[in-house]
Length: 387
Ligand SMILES: NC(=O)c1ccc[n+]([C@@H]2O[C@H](COP(=O)([O-])OP(=O)(O)OC[C@H]3O[C@@H](n4cnc5c(N)ncnc54)[C@H](O)[C@@H]3O)[C@@H](O)[C@H]2O)c1
Image 1 (cartoon, rainbow, N blue to C red):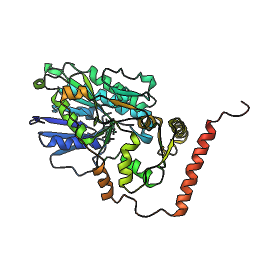
Image 2: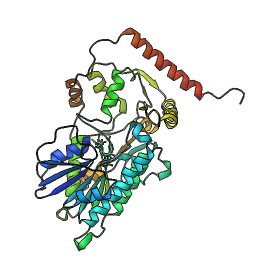
Image 3: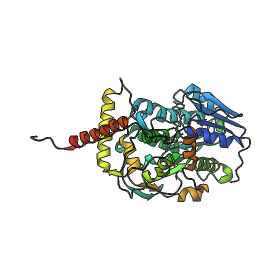
Image 4: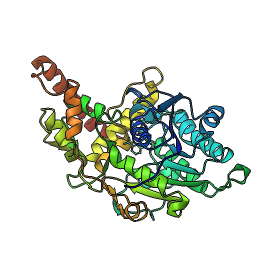
C-alpha cells in the first residue's frame, strides 16, 4: 500500500486501547506526530515518538487542547462494549455520544479536515439474521437495540456522518468524515474478549456451545483493521477525491465462520477439549436476561462480571455477516489471511495452557454448579402451575 502520511499529525482518541495503540504504532512509521488521547495509558511500553495524553473526551476543554494542530483524527474511544461495562448506561452515553459531539465540535473549531470514526456492526444488527448485508441496510431503529452501547455507537456514527462537509472555522475548508464498522476484533494481546474467553476455558465454564451450528459471524484481525483505517484516512484526502467522505464501511476478514468454531484453535491450542454439548440459544438468552436483572438489582453493591449479556449471546449465536465489496472498491481494502496461531502463542508465552488436571473435588464442585444453574434456568422457564 503506497500512502504518503509524511508531515501529518494524527490524534487517536482511545489510543491507549488495544486497537488504537496498534494503529498508532503503524502510523508512527510515516507520520510527523501521533498523539494518543485516553483516560488510561496503553499497557505496552510507549515506543519513542508516540505521545500519550491522559485526558477525557467528555471534557471539551481537554478535547480542544488535544485536537489543536492535528491534521486528522481517528475517533476510537468508546465505553460499554462488553461485560459489566455494558450495563453502565450513564457513562456509556456520556463517552459515546457527548464525547463524539466534543470531538466533532473541536475539529470544526480548530480546522481539522479529516475524521475517521470506529463504529461497529451493531449499528444495523440487533439480533436479526443478516446474510451478506451491505451498507444500504438501514440503521437498526434505536429503540430496538437491547444494549445502550450499540444504541449510542449508532447515534455517534450518525452524528459523525452528518458532520461531513461542515465548514471549518476561519474558512479553511470543510470537515470530511467517514465511519468504519468492524466485526469482533482479535489478535495477539487483545484485552477485551480473549482473556475473558481464556478464563472461561481455564475455569471449566466453557462446557457447552449454543445456537445453530450453521450460524455464521465475522471477526477482523487487528492488522486488517489498521490497514482499513489507514486507507480510509487516505480516501478522505483531495488527492483521493475525498471518495470516502460521508460514507460508512463494514470491515472484517471477509471470512464468515461459526463463532465457536472460530475459537476452536484457541481452545485446543491451549490443550483443552472442545465442548460437545450444544444448548438452544433461547435458553442462553434467557439466562443472560436473568443475569442482567440480577446485576441491575445488586450491581451497585457488587458489580460482578456477568457470564454473558443478551447482546453477547446474539452477537455470538445469530448469523450476521456483511459484504466487503464497498470497502474493497472504494478504499482498496484487501484483508490478509490470519489465524489464531499468534493468539495461542501469546497466551502460552504468558503461562496459559493446560498443565495438569484440576483436583477432582474442584472439578466435582464445578460440575454440580453448572448442573444446578441449568436446572434453575429450566425450572424458571416452566409455566407456574395453577396460574
Ligand atoms: N473490540 C471489538 O471487538 C470491537 C468490535 C467492533 C467495534 N469496536 C470498536 O472499536 C474501537 C476500539 O475497540 P478496542 O477493542 O480497541 O477497545 P478498547 O476498550 O481497548 O479501547 C477503547 C479505549 O477508549 C478509552 N476511553 C474510554 N472512555 C474514554 C474517555 N472518556 N476518554 C478518553 N478515552 C476513553 C479506553 O480507556 C480504551 O483505551 C471502539 O470504538 C469499539 O467500539 C470494537
